[in-house]
Length: 167
Ligand code: AR6
Image 1 (cartoon, rainbow, N blue to C red):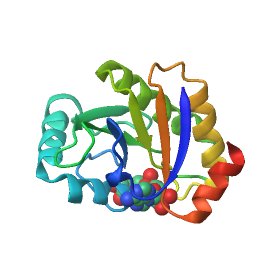
Image 2: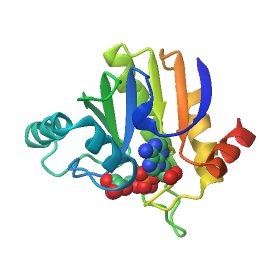
Image 3: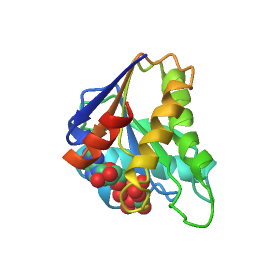
Image 4: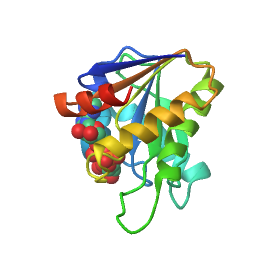
């Protein structure tokens, strides 16, 4: 598996699958989620609604992942995963690692050769970037996934620098 760091906007990635830092409702939100739905168009939300109705009445649990079309994006699939909200009093690292593992498991089941990840939970969900980078890189390296091109798409220079130092 080749792991690459890219600075930029994940919606512009040409990976076969891009991962969305979603919330349990799968109905969209801010940050990466907002950008993916805005640029990908309404088809993504339509599939999310169907998934909710068919399988996730109570929402997609934290740490799990599910795929939809990527609508108008260059990617073929969007893999939606729900990161944990960072907590100072409770260690939720396993749930964050699970987001990466489960997303790669879904990618393998789709036969996706390339997957682009954002830094899950490091925006609205408040996870410190350095700790999130360590968890993300370890989880991907240890996943045993067949995907051979994994990219982390970091939105700004600070996030890129933190991932670079960890890699
Ligand atoms: N491309 C790449 N990275 C981005 C982009 C982008 N277009 N936009 C933001 N980032 P966040 P979370 C970075 O908040 O913390 C939503 O409302 C951002 O700088 O998108 O997992 C959902 O619906 C940060 O480093 O996701 C949930 O309710 C990282 O991506 C909640 O936010 C993740 O930030 C999820 O929060």
